[in-house]
Length: 351
Image (tube, rainbow, N blue to C red; front, top):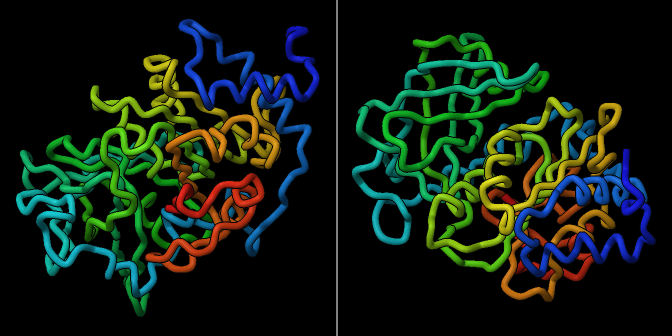
């Protein structure tokens, strides 16, 4: 049950949560109250029923924009022409880009992590090699079934550490009529899949920004986790991180355990807010879609110094929050909620 502190005037509630965006919380602070406040704030705002086709803001039928939608002809052109300075890829790494072509990797294990999600581990061809992926970047996957005229090519972002030798891990949600996600879920250990990359996204360096915020829906969380992991594993990086993560149901929340561990280990630098379309009884965090009121109370403000906002998810989320990307290599105009809140185009990056 909510304490009496929850029932504050809206202005006080907003001020209480926004304080996190501009100053570290006191040691030992309890996030439960904040989560309850955010849940109340989400209920108070109008919902953005902005779908693209049949996909909702958090994605129910389509593969997410960065993890499973068809790769355009320009997608492969984003792979560096060669390894070396400026690409973040060393020639000795597994994936070097350029004319390397697709590499066949063996599926070592397939583990169900929810009713519609699996964690897949692919073994690198050399046990002591590493992926060679810079943060943040993705890989192309390719599969051609016996009755397919053309192969299916989709980008996916690994969730394993880039410096971990010998393997790559992916967290993959299956989507109805999603040819690559269905194939990945049907794969058995010992089978192989073709990969190519890396596809550089947002080049991250320690302390590049004072505060970053991730706004994600569904499987759009994987590039966010890639950046967060790079930040918190580097003792020299003092960047502050806020996550707003929307899903349909509680069991759809990917990497929740990993983010909870970061929140416990770095309580003054990381905070996560979860929003569900269909929350269970007793859910005390965000309900409905990610709204303007919710983002206004949880994100660092547009004038709060050197900040960066990252957006990733299905088409409905892009449309509501930031506007869609123009193409795989072009960010497109900033619109939606973030534009309404006063953020500038150079403060937002769409994965």
